[in-house]
Image 1 (cartoon, rainbow, N blue to C red):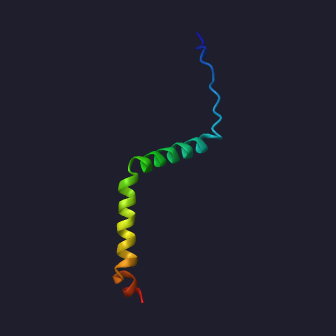
Image 2 (image 1 turned 30 degrees about the vertical axis):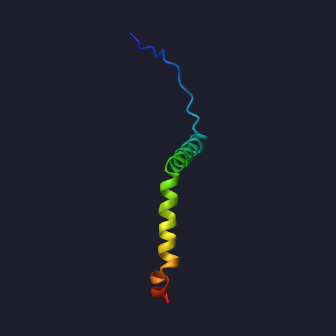
Image 3 (image 1 turned 90 degrees about the horizontal axis):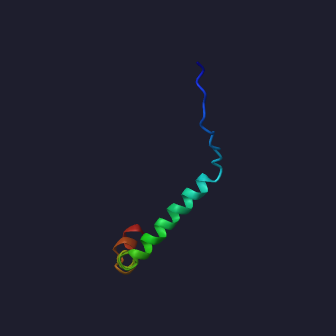
Length: 62
């Protein structure tokens, strides 16, 4: 007896799959930035003040 395949073939159009993945990654990064906004701002300010106000890093480059 012959085996009859009764399953329907699902279309495999994946042209937009990369775009959807990129949008999801960007949304996750933006949400993380909003959640940790204050901590990230303080961290960036500390680094900027160390590099530009202290003079040790800039002075050692000359």
